[in-house]
Length: 413
Image 1 (cartoon, helix red, strand yellow):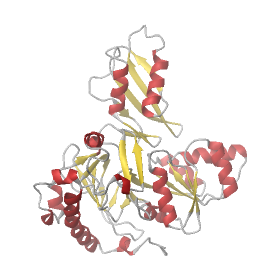
Image 2: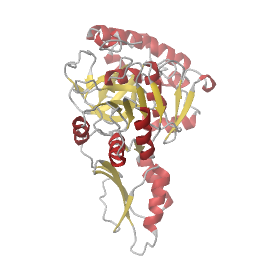
Image 3: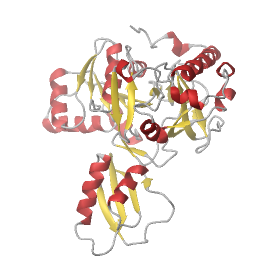
Image 4: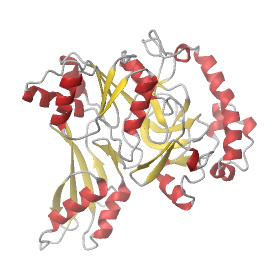
């Protein structure tokens, strides 16, 4: 069980010692991936794994894009040949929107979120109120396994039913919350409305959505420590905040590159580009996995004492996919809606921020006599994205001819 200020000694290693260890593990990782994962046997057929022991050599390898993962898995089910163990030997199999099928192997903290929760201040004996979904998608299990690895009890609350959340917190007195950044505020306001005492919650760990400055200020004014992490269903934890709140510190078991969007070319530190991750997990050895997310490397190390590289956190999407209320919305989904309404012109999904909440509006070019169309579009939008949104019908030819189908107008910060 971790003790002290740091989760383990890996967090405070000399940076060169860390780099040597990561590069030393990389070649062996590629050897195993090529030998045991059919996808990498094909992709790396002309690569000599023993020679891939520097970042320059890694940067010469091809990317595997998250946006292509659904098609790769469809061609070679269930996991596209990217795993090294058969499906029946896994602990769980998740289904994320796309659909994308995500494996979870055994082990105490497979997704490695214990490190991020420890940096947030969770300790053995705490109770975590976990509001991430346990249905198909892995977020609920990711945070639960991290908390259990620390010796914490977990309330598997899931999303929705705000009053029930508030009453459970008032009764069970958990010390910490995990969930999307804005849902904790919703719960606290419901508790205020009902006259409930929710002051047991002193810490929060948030992810799966933008953490806006106004929300940070709200929690600070209530005396809460609410920190964020960055991860994906495929990769688990990528980076996390400490109480220094100066960027996000990389996990100890990933190699991260920032590349120019649309290429595999590594950018200089400080330049915003696409996050590409090599995951040093033997069961799912993702190599140069292009997430589609934007970020940048920060100079120096964190004042908290952790010595790993820091990134600026999630700065948007290199493609047009975006997260709304913790769920990805993808251009492919808007295309699906368009196919269901062949008489429409262009469609554009506008994502904005209103009253500390994400708001979606689907703008659709439609003929003037489109009776009942808005209602049918709203229902289809909900069915396809699993999120509610407003519908705005506009005149044919009025939307820009720029290829954009998702317009995320939320401020980044």
